[in-house]
Amino acid sequence: FDRVDKGGTLTLAVDGDDLTDIEIPQIVRMLGSTGLDVGRDALSPVVDDYDAPFPFTGTIDRITFQIRSRADAAEVAATARAELAKE
Figure 1 (cartoon, rainbow, N blue to C red):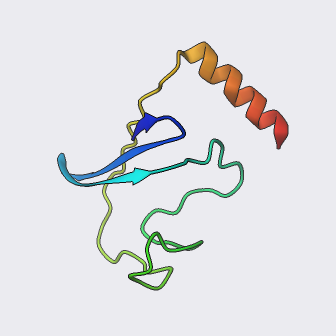
Figure 2 (figure 1 turned 60 degrees about the vertical axis):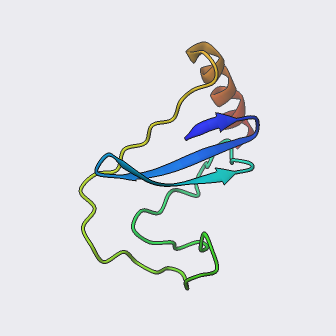
C-alpha cells in the first residue's frame, strides 16, 4: 500500500508478481474491533461481482503486508495513541 493524501494505491501480488493495483480514495485510520477477513469477505463484498462471504477454497500459505509510512515513528506512535484514546 502506497499512501497518497487520505487514500493510496493497493497492489495485490502473488508469488512476487504484481497482479493488480487499485486506488483507494480514503482509508480507515484505525480498525479498532472490526478485524480483518482473510480468505473470505464476511462484512461486505469489495465489488458487486460476487455474493459475500465468497470463501476462497485454495490454500493461503502466507500473507505479507508492506505498508510504507509517510511519517517518522514518533509521529505514527503519537497518532496511534490519540486514535486509540477515542475508542
